[in-house]
Amino acid sequence: ETGVTQTPRHLVMGMTNKKSLKCEQHLGHNAMYWYKQSAKKPLELMFVYNFKEQTENNSVPSRFSPECPNSSHLFLHLHTLQPEDSALYLCASSQAGSSNNEQFFGPGTRLTVL
Amino acid sequence: GENVEQHPSTLSVQEGDSAVIKCTYSDSASNYFPWYKQELGKRPQLIIDIRSNVGEKKDQRIAVTLNKTAKHFSLHITETQPEDSAVYFCAASSATDKLIFGTGTRLQVFP
Figure (cartoon, rainbow over the protein chains, first blue to last red):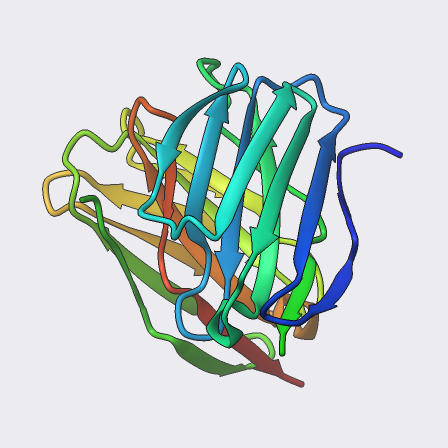
């Protein structure tokens, strides 16, 4: 599959569960991002990874833990979430440092926390 | 931190009319301004972008204008069609490649 893929597409979890979201980009990019999209605050930047190094943590609670093992894969580990964490989580990638700053988004994971 | 404000939050137009969405940014170092379109249930996709060394850019029915002095930029859609109905997001970025998004505008084009 081409572009940016995310799994799972839908996830329902209890507040005591531990789950992980996965993102994979097939575009040869060197930067990856996690965004939270909810009705109240559309497209909030959560984390930025450039060349596998985290360069941005936008005051995200520690119950969200990102992992970037290589430039093609990005994970978001979830534990002890709250109902207000229910949202669409979007992954994106780009070629940082190039003349083209376009970010390509994945289809998102719709997360519901019960 | 950097902030991007976007107006209006909702916009309804008749098919064939024009639509204008406006954004302002706070960081004077911002030099890249993309616009994304997100259709219902789909991912955001880039439709047009502009850099700080250009005042206006046009691509068929869509155009973007930038006023660096006032720190605002606008999206113009002419001859709107029902398939233009979506949520539109503006964004601003400085050299860090980080995009700060506006709050979105839900555009509805009525036939």
